Image 1: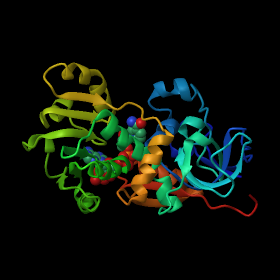
Image 2 (image 1 turned 90 degrees about the horizontal axis):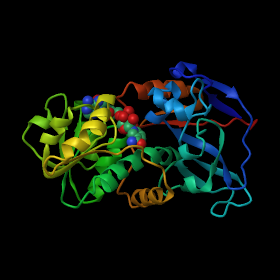
Image 3 (image 1 turned 180 degrees about the vertical axis):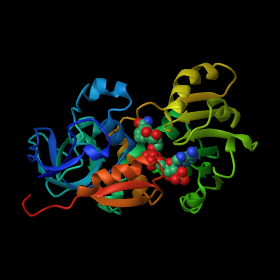
Image 4 (image 1 turned 30 degrees about the vertical axis):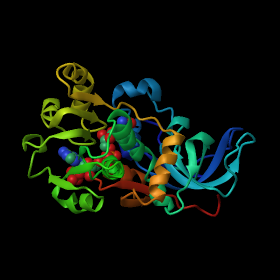
Length: 329
Ligand SMILES: NC(=O)c1ccc[n+]([C@@H]2O[C@H](COP(=O)([O-])OP(=O)(O)OC[C@H]3O[C@@H](n4cnc5c(N)ncnc54)[C@H](OP(=O)(O)O)[C@@H]3O)[C@@H](O)[C@H]2O)c1
């Protein structure tokens, strides 16, 4: 089968389209014919081996996972003897980062607990766009942020993969949502349901006197004390992504700042894929409460280009890779 292989750390240029052996499912695994995979920042971190500490788990000198790609949607081709929930022909989607990656390929094996039946009303492209980004948004809002109906919630970086889901999920919880993005994405943020939009090129939301009960930092950078100023007296700040400076401030200073007064400053950490929450997202998708926005669609052979585009940091929603299957496979 064809796969995008990475045998050394580096920029997207190190990726190669190669013929590799088609995988065989173990007893508890499902073999999936990949229709679409989505690109995530996590692919870029693994590709570059950056931050360096990541290499303690991903391979010190060379990557352990030679085929990247976590988010997939496709059709079940075969199942291992212990698989109970799926059968050949089922259309599935999921985040397979906890079971070996490998989505940038014509076929991949994954444990059945990483997969859920594809939402009935979604294409393979839309389904592949969901798992990782939507669960980061959900975990930031619901689990860490304890979102409540009627709260004023601000999403910084509302036009990216995570932010686009965060706006819609926050609306589904009955929050009053403010989306922060650049001029070209204001209409998109409104169309996602945002009640208010702030153009970060024109206005600094940390300085306009408005206060929010929950702030999700999905992208961009502001000093942590600026975020604190924009919180209501019992407000909470949750950092789910953004610059490294943002991450270190939230990790190191967040707990200290939270000890003073009643505002809480926290970091989501690594959001773990799980079936229960993917089913929760599937229900929101099927109820048309959430709809993925797809910015660009690439073919498997264009995966390096897709990752280069994502790395520029201005994707508008998700970047997906559609796998063109050859007759040979
Ligand atoms: N915690 C976890 O487990 C986890 C998992 C996945 C991702 N993440 C992290 O989450 C972050 C976001 O991921 P993503 O997939 O949403 O990224 P993304 O899709 O690449 O985000 C791109 C978006 O960010 C916006 N943006 C860039 N600079 C901004 C700024 N200064 N202020 C506001 N918006 C800005 C861009 O809008 P403009 O073009 O208008 O600037 C663009 O729409 C990344 O740092 C990623 O590492 C964390």
